Image (cartoon, rainbow, N blue to C red):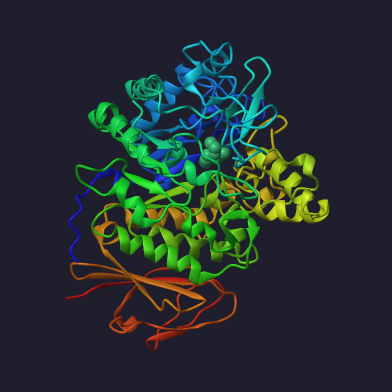
Length: 561
Ligand code: NOJ
């Protein structure tokens, strides 16, 4: 089928995600900041990124490290101030890079002025900014919902004798988007950043922003009870339409929405191109569940077939109608090499994983440190962790009778803090991330895994990412070519091809340490192909097959017909 979608800058870009607290400390307080970002803009540009997405930079008490916002129109003093942000924006733009902010509008911090005013009195105009409800009876929350992060979803105020709703942590009260005044505030926030010159937004849990009328009881679950009453309700689209028509479209702003439990069929209701489009693209989670059940915290053995099914489903179902957001890492997941690859074959498997997703159809997102092949770290005790989710799970797992040593092992593999250890810039103390005491432990493997070492080694992952992104850039075959998966049933090899106007690409990825025999699919003649990428020394191809080395990947190209 010929692809009728329009070319667009946001399809052709690659995005680098910065989680600011752990990126680079420029003022010596142990916390990453915008002074640090300024020092590293050249690094990001050299990687081949066309845009930066900043995880929240706003003032926040950090109950959820910035995803609990206390002021939407300012920069946290931890990171700098508005003037410094403007300088970062200017410098990024001067390098041809766009800047996207994280827009967290499902909830605020309980330290936001709106929330403080909302709990002053039931008569406050801010009271209806949030979901304040009386209990079903004394001592009983308004419904049975449980939060995703921290126990029950309702917190009681003695003063008001009412409960407020928090789908995430207690310090993250949910905004009542049904209230037009709240939507006006959201639009005002968007306008504020767009007026400064920001190019778009990553929209946090955007499919949660509408709650079912009457807030009925939910199906009982260990966490997240009630989610069927606040996930992807029809009103989400009404709100997004309003934001788009009134603010985002006139400004030409880019949007990517984060959407837990999203399927391609449902996603198309939001991202199908044309008049009805509400977001440019969506972050779904299906390919992040190949080694777990629903959440990272319920580990399962890695199953390549599950991963491939998710990849191919999104590639084929969006083909010709909508655009994919491609990612393997962000601040909410453990490191991908430690999950789907191999720490033993760190560089090899890291390269293979990069090829597995960067050459698909869609816009790639690269998370800080992914390009260096950073891995999970092993903390020695629960006290060293930082995240509300880990602490909540410690309690939940203890209730299930799981001993603390076992919990520590699970947390070390599965907590999202694995993705939040400070960026490893060099072999200097604290990985060159900061001068003083870092806010969070630096992974001790920084002496070996760091940007300076990667820069010096032309076979490093960093160079591989640069080469792949350079190859993708402006390449119509990678950007717009048709995607076909081969050998769907293989448990060890992910193989896909791209085709466009006589050019073809074949990507072969071995998710296996053990040797696998790979026979090129019918119509792909390796003897007459050019090998563009390989994570091992090239071998002379003597037939249309080869035996893979651990985590081998090869990319072949044909410019035929
Ligand atoms: C998704 C964000 O990516 C995550 O970090 C955050 O904890 C939740 N949304 C709540 O805002």
